[in-house]
Figure (cartoon, one colour):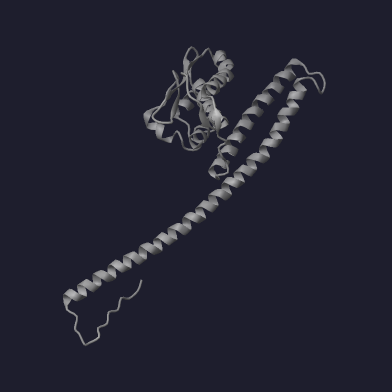
Length: 253
């Protein structure tokens, strides 16, 4: 790294103690210089990595956006055909048109997940906070999932008490609640129950929970739940596949 030179004004022969002290000073200086160089190198690498991540997220967002438009067009055409706007269709054709629409909705949801994830990772997503009624949001979300729960014979319970007005982003909170409720219903057997509730926490905090009587998650798998494209083995064994992005997006929000 360098040389530490020491000069005296008059002729002097350095003894062992002085040499030892100067050697120690040189070693400390060498370590300080090396640490500074490593820090600068690490900072440069971190900046380059951040740029690469943003470029990748921007590219993913662009691809996801370009995929969603034609998918929406396909679904729109299938709905028009199903409604008889392009001519009469028989029952067999209606059945396949319904399958096209259902598959299209799944694909649109998948693309939307990719788009949301890309935006969040790139830091392009903001929170539109406003004064909102959390009780109303929870009730509305439960109503949306009531037909699905009834179809599976699952009881939905609302255990939300009276809550103060919150200053939050209702659309993003609804996105998180929908993900948790959808998972709870998906992995709960017929005859089971799903409950959503809330309580006041310490200070200006409200805690919201979703619990169910479903298949559960082994303790050793909890750590990977919030990693991209991961799904618990119990979920796979249950025959329910997912993108492994819903919980990641929920946690980021």
